[in-house]
Image (tube, one colour):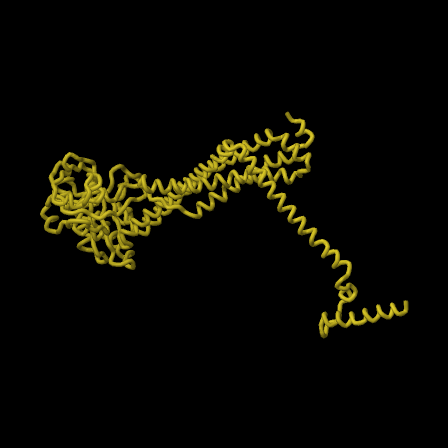
Length: 467
């Protein structure tokens, strides 16, 4: 025994300085570090617990996997019911994506068209005439003399283009249709940013001489069933019963998303011809004014206001009887309008998602009732409330996710089909796709909780006795 005591003393003696070296040069060793060796009972218990933790995690993973497989097998057994259940989600997600695509496409189309007109274009339109503070049916006039006054006295204008328009019968051969007829000056392509696809533009001499010549938009060629613009060049057509010669065809500017008239569906004739031979009036629909530069737009607007107020003999206290709009204002107005319209369409479509969620909840409640004995057997064999809850919740989520996935493809396909066959400019927004998909999953969780909780709360004995 003395020899054994000496041996223990010799082994334990060097352990103290080793612990002090681990702690540090200047800091004293803590008592807990010196008192509990590395191979103490605390370390042994932690090391022994690690395999138990790993085993428990593996069991939990296997349990979740088994629950998922059971939920999927339950859905496969009732394929038709599962399809009809998720049909509401499919329609809801597809409707949201398609409606947002239409709204976004319209917004982009209008923005591109306004931007294509140039940022220095100002459009002057006649305002509503007012009597006793109330707008009357008859509009205030903009006349050719107003345009001439702008040409003479304007200082910040690069070009001025008066226009008058009216829908008249356009006839070529045996084909006729109501078409927008626009009377304008030879500088119309410069102001409205049109280019010629074939032929030429009428000149100042033809405008001054009231010649019956016409330049048509590209949509007119399509409406007549002609293959090329050159097919109409030099041909005689009738506008409002008068014969005109087609001397040019404009390039296409494209549709505006199906919400407005086609900008390419018009016929352009000299302003003097329209005034004296076709329409018999000097009233203008608008006056296009190009400012010298973007910096000069405020000065150009002030010049227009000053000149037209003098021409219309408006006293100081009276408001303008005309409107001046620039492209930035047009762009802002249309962007706000289409944004509101897009939210409205998406909101209406989102209601169908809620309806689909309620349908899922109803079907899942019916499923719980039908599978009461199955739930009782599973509980009798040791299934926990958590396992039953997860099974039915996973079924609801899987239905919504599958419905959302199908809805994404259906909505994207519908948008592409509208773009190709329906003359709508559609733009599929990825944020709308993600939002609709996440929303469908959320619907599955929200409307699947109640049936899942009801299934989990069933008493196993009562469930086994259920007929």
